[in-house]
Length: 482
Image 1 (cartoon, helix red, strand yellow):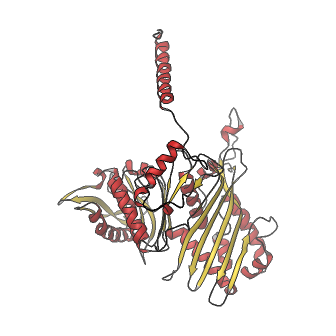
Image 2: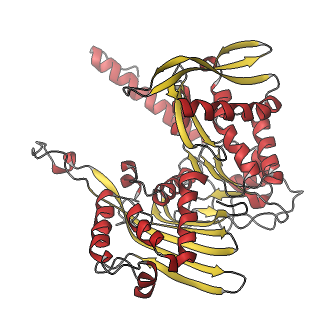
Image 3: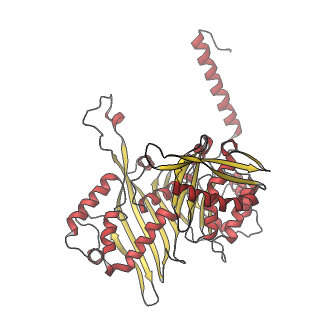
């Protein structure tokens, strides 16, 4: 991707996804005069914050042409036939600028059996496993160049069962091969069967890339594919559990080098390919420049412990040791706190957000394990001086004191309008205090918190304890106290 090329998410809308019957967030609402796009989502537990991050992970898998994780079959709201996810982007590729809308539906289907043996169970439901299916994809775009300006039109729509995609005029433009129909219809059916995007499948893209008459749309598709594979990173809460279990997720992007995400076990020296060792050494060198300013005196080291074979393969690799060094004392990184390991795992991505306009990073529970004052300062620096896009959720409300109001969104108790943005608030007003005030006093237009009452919570604790005591006594043949 050439310098100046960029893809950025500008709007997300969800229907029947997890506990969100409907919700949308406009990410274009940002303070003027800044290059970055920062959005923090705040709200009570179970109110839809993680659903927003999950939708971005599904987007990443769709744009990457990957088979969706099976867990997403369970993300469709109970009672709904399907979920609908819609994403808007702005894309710049050379001198061409696009406004893009990508929408698709998500349903669950019974997974194909992995054997021909009939399972024996009391109920059929016990044996059924489900997989997610992407269908009814639609890609729209508006195009603007120095000499051309086209309004928003449909580029590809897969709703028809009798066509590869519609409209027919776009199909004829993009697929310059009259013999491709049968093969592409088979590929479309296979994408449904596997549970992946057809519009961003390698099979369809290979036909479009052969056609030199569709350069404008080829550039758009290649930009979105690159974004999904290499410039959109999603870190979910399961990463926090991995860190606690002595694994360290490294997400990295080095110009002219390898790009991706890997998990390194740190409770024992892992073996990695030689190319990965070079990438990791470079990455940690860059990270240490920033790490020492965040946690004075702390650096991370990577040591070559000799050659070994990678896994069960015969490929030669390097056994490495990861350490932390503070005040000239070096210890294995596994013995550092989870907070330090969390900072290390996301730091390279923060460096990328600071320097690269086309980087988008989404982190669920960014505040987990990070000192709240440091968290607030980091977010303030990224928002004021960074170039990329950061989307995060947080239970800690410290970011409300350091970020502008337009960099925040809140969940509500209304599943039909799950996300709101607060506008028209002066910078001098304390957003954190205003949020607490809305929780306590309520609001005429929306409710931010399902009210809880202390005496009911205390009574519930006592009732649960009494039932547990009664169960213990009954198991011993005794009687509960009056």
